[in-house]
Length: 250
Image 1 (cartoon, helix red, strand yellow):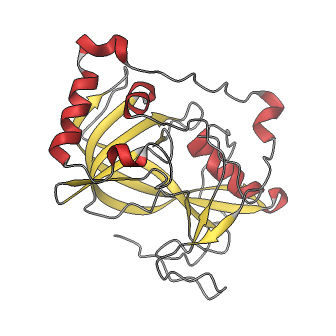
Image 2 (cartoon, one colour):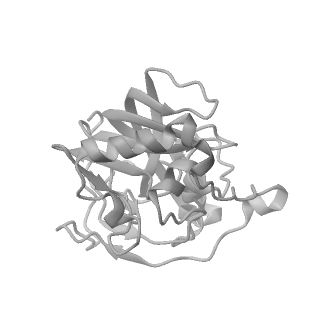
C-alpha cells in the first residue's frame, strides 16, 4: 500500500502497511508518553493498489477473513530523530470468525493487524478514510503480510468492510468508484457476492492486479515525497493541544 505521506517518519510507518519497507527494529523505544485516544487528522498519499471493483479487491487480496476486533493497543515504533521523527502503530487484535481466503497462509483463531497511528508527539492520525478500529467492530478484512516484518496489514486502505447492524460500511474513498459498489448494501448481499467470487468455479474470473516490486538495498531507506494532511471532520481537534492519554487497554 505504498503511502507517500507527510514526513520521513510517517513514510516509514506507512511503509510497514504499504510496501515502503521500514527497517525499524520494532521496539517501543522513542514511543510518546501520551497518545491521542482518537485520530485528529487524515494523512493522504499514494497506494500500491487503487481498487475500482469488488472483483479486483477480492482477487488481489492474499487473505480475506471475517473477524471481530477484540483489543487495540499501541504497537511498534518506527523512525528516529535523525530520520525526521518517530511514528507508532496501533495493534488491532482480531478474532478470526471465518477464513474466506487464505492464500497459503496459516491463520489461527486470532491475528494482530497493524494500523496507523501516532506521530512522535502522540498526535493521532488515520490513513485516508480508514478510521481506527474499535473493540467490537466486526466485518471483512482484506489483508496481506509484510514480507520484512511479517506483520498483517490491509492490502489497501480500501480493505475493510464493517458490518453495522446488517448494513456494510466501506473504508474506501466515498468519492471513488469502489465505495458505492459496497457501502450501504446488506451484509447478506455482500457476503453472497464474496462467496460467489471465491467459489473455485469462478477463480478464472477474478481480477488480480500486479504486485508492486519490493524495495531492495538502499531503496528501503528512500524517503518518499510528503503528502497533504487534513483534520478529521468529526469534531476531533487539530489545535496543538495536549494529546488525550491513550488507554492502556481497550
